[in-house]
Length: 428
Ligand code: ADP
Ligand code: MG
Image 1 (spheres, rainbow, N blue to C red):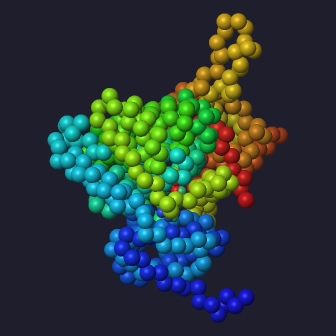
Image 2 (cartoon, rainbow, N blue to C red; image 1 turned 30 degrees about the horizontal axis):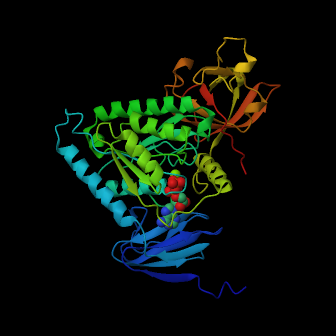
Image 3 (tube, rainbow, N blue to C red; image 1 turned 30 degrees about the vertical axis):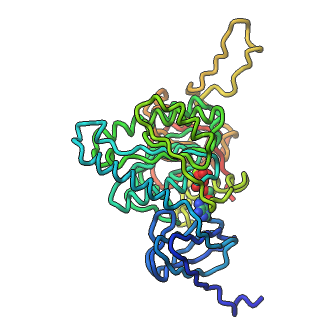
């Protein structure tokens, strides 16, 4: 082809309140702001600096007052849209700012008035929940707040590997490519990528995380005033709805943002009516939100795990370690599938406790598992402890009783207690 002679650099002029929606193809794309102002999901683009976007990333460059963008490469899709819900989103941000200011001015020993907004974003899959959470966090950070981001999505979370719920303070607008810095998040390991594996455990962990944050807020007026933004899963029916309601109440959310679902919005309004001041706000889903098929979701989960060990651009080198079976203690939570009542003696109750901690023998079943390294000091602290990080099992030698695994950095594991779920990874 004549690709050498055809310039791939193209200028796009964006009118005020318009956005350029891009799905990067299998080859990367570069883009820069030539003039005006523009942002990607709440984070402003620096002038004239080329930014590199990895394959398959989906995003929008939005401008409030007009901008010219230069793009190098051919995206899978790239079009300009003049209808976006951004004005309604930024109005929500303005209201939240007002509440933060009010909280900051209140006496810090008044635990109610000095509490900033606790916003939870809910809605079906692919309604733009994660994107809206990011915008609200980045806009707040730009104004000097340090809001806490809580990600309750165990499937497509953006703080750490899948299978976790986690929280981290956001101190700077979120980088559109790098995402949330993996510095020192507070992470609880659920161990599965589907909430239905162990609903009870999920709720217990949500409660643990909320409890810790509550204690941190009690001693930190600045983060209390900045408040939190909670991102949730797209499961909103049946048990999923129960879990949402449980999260709203456990975190004492006072603003519920419902994306693109009338029914969920009116259900939540009804049920939360009697409770101390919770605002349920319906927001429009952006036409730019892209649906991600199951395969795509699986691939992005796998990429998250790769990123944890190897870095976003293969810039990290994980360490391979070998331990004796006897030096590590592996546990799983929950008694596995419950015995059906019909299989039990008359009058007996099924014994499987969903939050029971069970010791696991190390064997070939652990090959390719991603395990969490718990901060627990005793096995019975495993559920109430957050985790230090993850290991990836690359070999099990039954004869020599040796286990080989990757860790993101060198040195001793911070603890010998490991948690096993159903999270696995195939290094490709
Ligand atoms: P949810 O969290 O509700 O499942 P996301 O916020 O993750 O939805 O959005 C789904 C996908 O759509 C993501 O890849 C996101 O980057 C992309 N996306 C969201 N808003 C836009 C937009 N305005 N233009 C282009 N892509 C978008
Ligand atoms: Mg999401």
